[in-house]
Image (cartoon, rainbow, N blue to C red; front, side, top):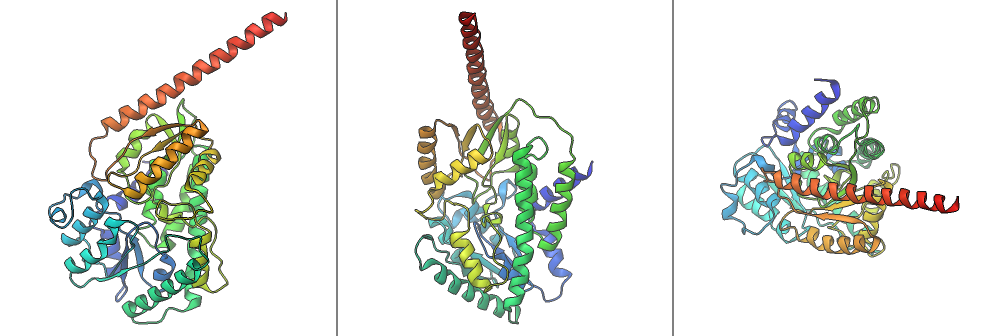
Length: 404
């Protein structure tokens, strides 16, 4: 196993470990230190880090947890990530957490904190109310107050105050982490045969489960190795994947798509990349975080901002990645994702961009259908592209003959 495979395998193992052994060991090795779990999409990890806590993203149990208890607490038509997250709590896989913070990003997620508080004894539960409408001038001051309230909650959990300077130090650290993640994505867009989507996903998602000061050197090592990786481009179409902003598809799902396509950009684990530029490091830290979320973040299905249409964001992503098609694939029963899919599809049709529509569940285990759909879609695009090239060459040859 080479070095880059070693890094990716370690990250994948961390992502797929539904017992959270790494977080448990971190806590056991640090007497009195706390672990906070947060539900996607976004959480101000800088506040938890400044408190001396380990913030980890709870993205459900994937296809490695059977729903033995959660189904009795939730309707059958609710999204899989909510059910499997509750199952993690009911099965005591989250008994190491000290705090759990949810966000009411949809009707299903709105009930998560209450269910966790009622069914997981000893867990401090809170709801972070992020502004859905970020275009109003009241959004930033409101969110700053919400972050200040969260700071007070964390201070009571850890038993000491959280200074502004500690938050600024955390902001600097996470700014560096986000810059390195952006570099990984930039390299992938430039040379997807050197950095695959499944590798990138594992690397970024692992950073949401480990200390940031351990993730940063891992990102640097990966970037150095990937830049030197030998490879050559294959005859694959370049696609942008849209729909994985909250519930995450299985890694096998991503790999099945990659057999026929280069996935050159995506919205996987969006919370780690939602802030699209550095958060100001020397101003009031809570105001800086609030301003960055409201006015410096990427588009998301759980935000509403008519200043920047989500379809505009997708088109910008499509063009900057030099893509040839879009895969629209929200999670099953995901109302925000399905609503946006309609708008994205209409925009793509208007722009003349080929789209493949399909859905996924984190609990999927059979990927033959995904593989078949993607291969058929890719082969059709390649066929028509070759036909257009042949027709163009024939027309040029005829024109040259007439000219002679």
